[in-house]
Structure formats: structure tokens, C-alpha cells
Amino acid sequence: MNLILDYASLGILVLVILILIYGLIAIHDIPYEIAKKRNHPQQEAIHVTGWISLFFMHALWPLLWVWAMYYDPKTQGEAVRGLTLAEQQNLQQQLNTLKASVTALQSREGAL
Image (cartoon, rainbow, N blue to C red; front, side, top):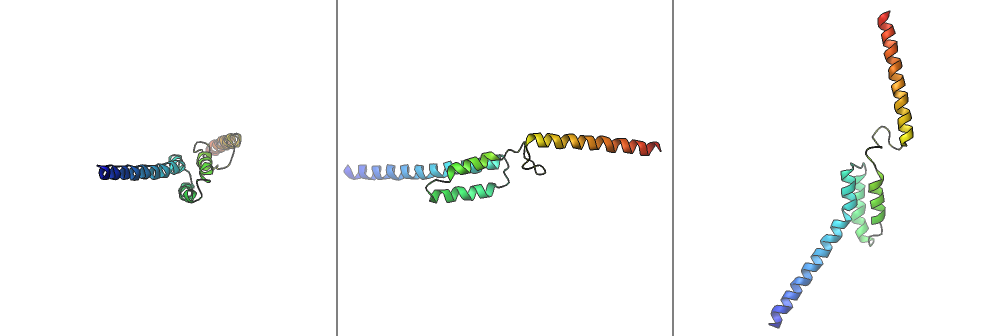
């Protein structure tokens, strides 16, 4: 009977260790999943740094979280990356003014 209990406790111990290892890996992939969801341009670097963080006793993980959350796809497109919202709105107004000027010039040219 003791032998069966020994093997059962060993099996439970191995199962708990495997669950803990899987949990650590799943938790460390959270910043990568956030970056992938937000279409972060540096998502692969975030993924690799997450694996490196496992060897540095998880010291880099909070920085990864901030790095993944920093990129906002709504305000940081390819052409205007790094601009504030006010600067983007100013550029949009200038673009609308230029479009109106071009339309006015084209209508004058058509009238000639």
C-alpha cells in the first residue's frame, strides 16, 4: 500500500511541477500576445525578450508589459508614428486646406 501512495505522490508532484512550468511560460507570453493583438511593429523583439526574461528571474517582464502597451495602433500609424494627437490633427487640417486649394486651382484651370 505504501508503494502505491509513494508513486501517487510522485505523480502528483510531477504534475504540479509541469503545471507551474506551463503557467510561467503562459504568463511570460502575455506581453507578446498584447503586442500581437495591437499589431506592434516590434512584436518579435518583445517575444524574444520574454524568453530571455525567464533566465533573468523575470526582472524584464514588467518592462515588456509597458513596451507592449505603449504602442497604440489608433494614434500611431505608419506615416505619423511618434506624433501627438494635436500634431496629427494639425497635419490633417493642413492637408484638408491643401486639398481645397488644389480643387480650386483645378476648377480655375477647367474654366480657362
